[in-house]
Image (tube, rainbow, N blue to C red; front, side):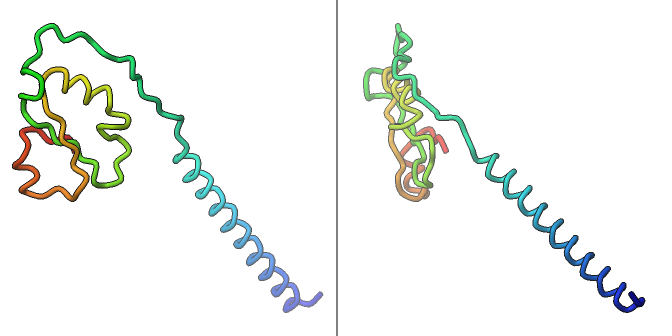
Length: 115
């Protein structure tokens, strides 16, 4: 084998090694990204109903609390936040679900915003 053939073979070997390393790194990165998105199932404890002996406000007469649900939110007042929303309602607060883009007028309609 002359030096030109040897150089060509070594060049091919280097390219093959580089491609293999690139493929390995891409696979490793993709695997890490996929693994990081795997979450355990989330459940809602609908039995969570702590006693409120002295509600802060009469039913439905408290401040409005705006819960942001306009951005494909995972937590919503009718989803995983049900126990929280229920607790606030039983304490007299009014829960308002924001299913449209948050704007000044919407924020002025509430006293508290949960974003």
